[in-house]
Image (cartoon, rainbow, N blue to C red; front, side, top):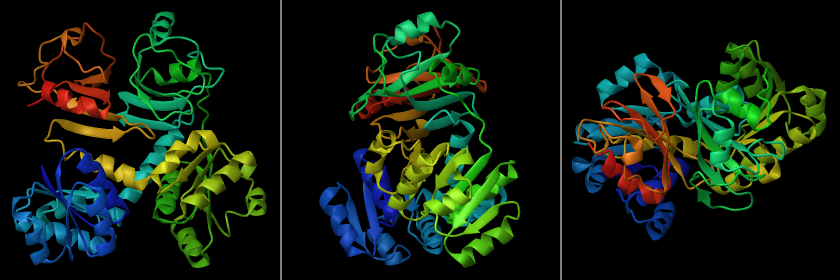
Length: 450
């Protein structure tokens, strides 16, 4: 697939890097020659120096024969203009990164589609939605829903009180026959190696484990892991950024009690006027005395979404030390994901990763209809659609030549989530949720090829 990525900033560079690993034909366009030189030196991609809204630059980038144009510069206007021009010049599909969250409403999307923009991506909205999902499942440090929760992926660290510890996958299944679940990925404490669990895989204390389960299995897994899915109502947010503002507004609308701390007085007053039911405090959220005065110890969750990753991490650590419940930090450096569990922060979110995951669904030749990367793991959760030409049609799972580096987490059939075992017979229209390591992507693609 030929792809043009306009914008070599944090989102664009990260996206180009990930797409280059997928052996896609990538052209990265930006006017910053220093960043382009870095990309040219370290990534297997083509770079073009210039303004993405320039017709000459788009021609040089090969827009006439491009399958996908992704405009993710820091400027919303440039992204929209780039996509409109690219579509008129022959690009098959276009995706624009936007900052105005009003644009992603269904009515507005249709207007942009008429202009030639096929999809709008708001990293800020994605981050806000991720925070809301994490708050709804307080026992977990990562979660992802398929078909509105018909299947749910949950990630957590196994403590000494977990009923899983000391048992194999098969033993847990035998001892809990009513538990519909599949462990899909595992990482040992202190390592960076991702394991696709099998029946004889042993659960150990400190393991970071991802499970998939149906809508009735979440509470059972919570109980078995020795955790408690506490209801979160009192939330403190540090940072009145777009993410902080949108998160506060959505949480207040859902009945949460929200306190938001913003250091800029003018911005604090603006937020207070726009969200009347949110208590907005103008001050430095890194000040421990301020946090104590605002009853940080009584907060069910503390969310730090300032523009500085280090501030977010340190603020969350301070909040946890003062007695706050779940701590969520926004970070820009992907390397920080490997530190989250060891330093005591419950969840880290990254706009680049969220945007890349969302955009990926348009890349893999239509075989995959959705995906997400598992945080801090070299594994992906993919959703394959079974067509009449797929090699898996009318076969039972146990009869498939299934890659050893992949595992079936579940199936969506007729809108219902199913934890599918060996005797499950595959039908056209089934959507398979599969966790896999990178080396399994090619054989999986052949199995589910249209």
